[in-house]
Amino acid sequence: MASLDTRARWFRWGAFLAGLTVLGMFTAVQLLLSYWGKGRHLTIEEAFLSGLATWYPWAIFAPMIDALWRRYPIEGAGWKRAIAIHLFTTPLFGVCWTTARWGLSFVPLIDPMPIDFTMTLVLHFQIWFLSYWVIVAVRQAVYNYTRFREREVRASVLEAKLAQAQLEMLKMQLHPHFLFNTLHAISTLIHKDPDAADEMVAQLSDLLRMTLATIGIQEVTLQQELEFLDRYLDIQKTRFQDRLEVTLDIPAETLDVRVPNQVLQPIVENAIRHGIDARSGQGLIEIRARATDHMLELTVRDDGPGLRSEVKLDVQPDNAPREGRGIGLANTRARLRELYGPASTLHLGNHPEGGAIVTLSLPIRRVGPSANEHSEAPRASTVALSAPPTLSMIGSHKP
Image 1: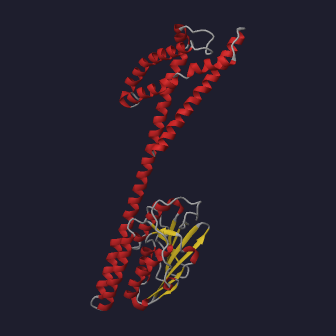
Image 2: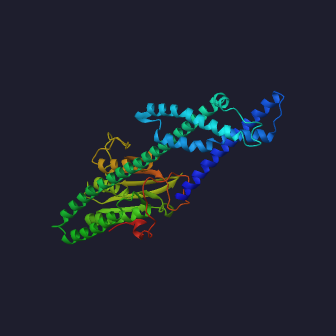
Image 3: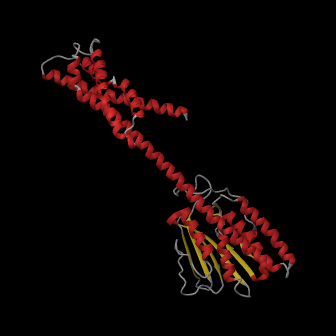
């Protein structure tokens, strides 16, 4: 970092000296034209050295002016006082510049003869006055730009932290909701089937360990999401026995796509609650993934009674669906909005063959630095691809 600062400092000084050299060349051309117009002789070498002698003294005075500006910047409540101080010091630097220019005129080849001090101070008023205030203005502009960029960076960091906090809050909202439902299911089995209840407790322990292992992680691969869902379905399998059938249609090319952590569990939980739990017979849950046009489409369908006709089917950002499906789907929609913005959609509707279907679309982001370089960088952390999913995740999931 120190070496970078040193290089940047030397670059600024090099650019400043280059600017003074360009001004000196313009002054040299002006001197040549002036002398030639009056029929007087002036060599190119003398004109060039005289031009440099006019501007190079500012390489000495500029750090002094910068130090003075640092003490009295033109900003805040003291801007009037700062301007008054700079107006007072401007003629002082004008005298210093005139003294330097007058002294350099005694050096051979710079001027044909020594210049007059008073005439130089008066006739070159525009040079030393404008030079001083250009240095002050440029220094103030650089300072203002630096502060603007720092505020932008701070605002970006704060926005990212806020988004992360909102995502974590939304994610954590699912945990007590899911835990309550699972404990309720265990309580119903304690007296009817103690062995099944004991198995569900062990399965819940495994699931909670997986949940704690991903605290702070907002995106995982679809493969990891399915592994977590498999643990959840094991609990539901114990609860519903042969009443629950789950089929999965997950192409292998979608397994490394990143998805929100625990995005499927609340959707599947809603499907089980409204499609399986609400009736006495066997029920079906279908989970499907498709990758199309840089988008990943996930669908969860149940074969239950479906939605009433008056229910609003599109899950809008600030309009949660009714029929008891609000917590999981509204929470999921809010997380999608934070992670992907308008690029993601979530739709709740009735399937033509019966039952309800939730369709979730989000931009494809794959693991690895070379994949999907056209997409935006994720706003949340991810984890690497883990071991392949079990065979039960590809096909039918039955007890």
